[in-house]
Length: 418
Image (spheres, rainbow, N blue to C red):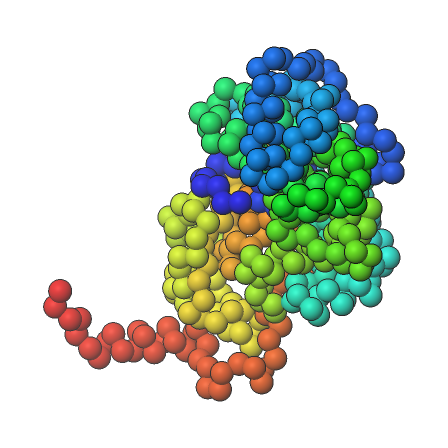
């Protein structure tokens, strides 16, 4: 789901790419859900709003209204969720160092290696089919939920209902409520189909499993409504989740193969370029130039050739055969702010490439995307091109050669009159 934002101002993780911010609640997917009921309520207006939405879905999709109403009889608002989605205070400082330390740490890395070993053959198969490296898939699932250990303890229907009809008073309240109303509708359709319903639903109740429908609505999620090992929102489950284990259904909670295949499918559909790196470090000599070009916009703007000429990148990073990318490829400056030990504001810069933007589509945060890169590198990922020499164009010039040629040409030719 596309949401406009200024990425450098994002702290921790923003909501609703494929997933939401990583939940901190410990959970076991094999245990019954214990909904957090602190300060819950079922205000009349809340119930009316749900009733109106259910009526809309019932009419649009020809689903029996009584079935939908039965599934939402006990829906509640949860005040703690409203607090969790509030923006940080004005004194809060974004901290890349602290964020990285939270995810690139021994426990997660050890769990990642174990997860990889347990699913090695399938990961290799999916990597071959999708072009998405196994390390990237393992890194994402590890950062999201530590491989299913932290999937949230909220009932998903309560989360989405709360945020759809009782979002806190913030400048983006209207757009956020609409966004979560859409996700609530997606949840209903997902659960309806998963329970054996059909769209349209006329004459389809014969095989419908009402118990399964209710269980689906009541499954656990993060405080933003993200579900399962990879923390997919309902819309992403419907659009990008796949049946990896071939059992005829998609289960992102209990099937590692479904989760693995779904993460790869999401990244592939969002433009992942096989064999290409994700980001490059900015050279010390180019820090001043990088600072000037960092505008927080997640758009591929500057050619690699240009970034090399400014000293931001090394010449070999503009050479496919040296592990870089083609000189004409584009990147953008990623700023990762943090306070140093004295509290002085500092910024770590990297150059984001196409695959970096693809990860940003999964979770809309520069912090998140760079953490995935570094987690994957810690697992052995080589953040460089893996394109066979035979596949590169014959006679392709390196960035260094192209820059030298450009400078030589400029000395021979006078600039054209404007």
